[in-house]
Structure formats: structure tokens, C-alpha cells
Image 1 (cartoon, chains in turn blue, purple):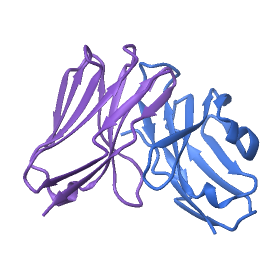
Image 2 (cartoon, each protein chain N blue to C red; image 1 turned 45 degrees about the horizontal axis):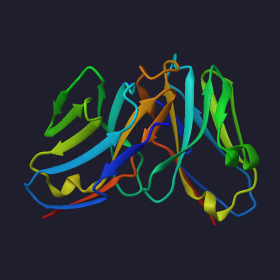
Image 3 (cartoon, one colour; image 1 turned 90 degrees about the vertical axis):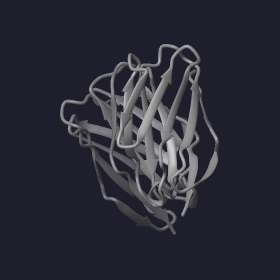
Image 4 (cartoon, each protein chain N blue to C red; image 1 turned 180 degrees about the vertical axis):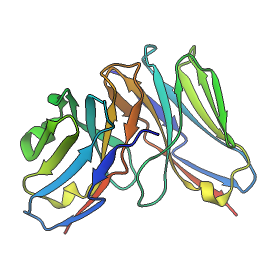
Length: 115
Length: 110
């Protein structure tokens, strides 16, 4: 079974603090995605990496987040200054390559609570 | 871009009855389709993924139907039990993104 690993599973930060969460994509996968989900509602796409390069991201990520994939085996998503609205489940997924004919696998997520 | 509509948003069924959730998508080039289950406070649990060359797939009391002509994907839980109570999401892969439906809150009444 494919395995995308996310760490930590739970993260608690105070408003104004920095937060960082990590994702280890499935071995051999070159496409990595981050999603945000609030309160079991729909998942919001945040950013997409292909071969460690960010190719698409929403404005919120550009303005307040820091996301990198320093290697093919590790990506991270950071929030520079946490706000209450950032409390959510952050899901990382990976796939073997870009394209519609590729199955995507998700990690179990990092649940961030901002207090 | 691709849009995914999921219905119903809420569904209550008695234990033992079947539950059907339907999603419609817009892009006929969509290739991969997924159903996920999410229990309270948990991440996404993949129930089934189907490639576009599959019309029907059955596993462990779940049936996924893909109607490419109508661009419709459905999930049928036969003989639902209280442990099936959760939020269910359909999703499709379009280009490089996974596009999700808004979810269906399923409540199986004991």
C-alpha cells in the first residue's frame, strides 16, 4: 500500500506563533499537494509541487505560508504567523507524476489548533 | 475548470438499509475517481479508487458506479450499519489536482 507520512499528527500553536508541518511523499512520487480542511467540510487546495518546484498555489499561501520541498523525500508547509482561522486539518498527498491518469495518495494529516 | 457536485449533503438511513451518494463532474477527460470516508476528528480513509475504464467496482459491501455518459459517480453502501456513520467525499483527479465534492454526512440509525 502507498504511504504518505505526515508529521506531527497534532499541533497546537498560539496566535502569532510559527507552525511547521512535514510530509514524506510516497517513494518515487514527484508530485506533492497540500490541502486544508476545516471542520470536516470540503478540502481546499493550497499548493502543488512537481519535482520539488511549486507550480501552483493559492494567494493565501503566497501571502502567509511558506512551503518547500527541499528533497524528493520531504516537503514542509509552514505558517509564518498563526491565526485562529488557520485551525484545520492539513492534508498532504502525492502521486507518481503530473497528469490526470495518475492515482493520488493521501497522508493522515496534521491537525493544527491555534489558540 | 472541473467542478464536482455531491448530493445529498445529509443522509439518514435505518440500519440495514442501503445508502446512495451521487457526484457529478464536468470534465469528460477526468481519469481517476475516489471515494473517501472521514470519521470525526480523523483524516481521509480511502474507500475505493476507480480508473475511468471501469464502470462498476464492488468491495466489502460498497459498490461504485461510474456513468461516463452522464458524468456521474455513485457510492452505494448496502446494508449500512452504525459504524458507517461518517462524512463521505467523492473526488476526481483533473490535470494535477484532486477536486473534492463538499461531502455527505451519513447517519445510520441503530
